[in-house]
Image (cartoon, rainbow, N blue to C red; front, side, top):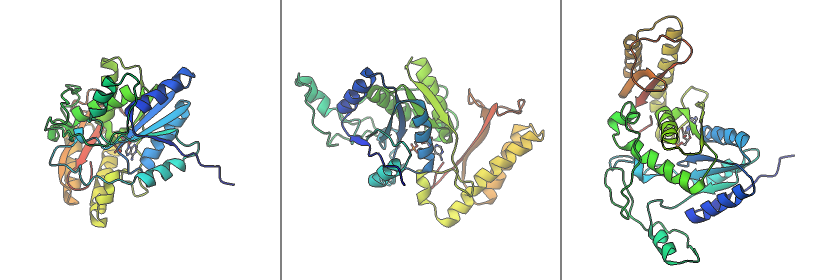
Length: 313
Ligand code: AMP
């Protein structure tokens, strides 16, 4: 017989979210947070499963953060399916406790109303505040950004110079609202995971950051919400990424240590498949600085690559 499915409590208001967390913590319960932008797939679900092992309670946030999209990027076409997301979360054994789904984390109108109202009564946010894009500092006077100055510069940060500023800022906001003990991020977004780890260390957040392994489809493509935009042909081309990265891994294991040669082999394979490369680099797994030779065989280095275009990183 199928176990009864747990329906998560959906919270849209940040003050209610904070109240829930504080009430749970005062009962001695520990809380995990899995931040997402929704349109969930099994990659996200693997993070939820990881979170379920670590704490008493699990919160999944679903929020497409405008602060990390440049005006030219795909904010308006980012896929969403809130009801589908809830049923996917309900299908996870154990289920999640809360889905935090705020309409606009850069709308401070209710905060101002709350400040005027000692009883702390708050209405649901209606998302009327202006959108804050990562390049246009508009919105309701939002002007505070978190930057992890060195780690944010290379790799994805080269062509998206303020992307990680948006990510670090929204994750800080989520940490301050949800007040979790643990937060789980995917290594698919490797630079993001390292940046959040560094931010938490440097700013003394009392939160344990977990990096979860990449989940791939059977054909080897890393699962991603944006894969929905790929045509069958584009998907076939995108597979040259995982294939060539696997090729680099086995070449390195067989003693090929020259990073320029290894990197060039990836660029060639992806270009031949018709892909457009933003970057291909072999970097130290912590500093994310490019290295010339692979001197440690056991995964001390990280290889990263971007497929640029409609599809995904
Ligand atoms: P997103 O909704 O794309 O912002 O992703 C939310 C979280 O899920 C991030 O920490 C991602 O790294 C993680 N994630 C997304 N896709 C995968 C995947 N295929 N495997 C593991 N983690 C993933």
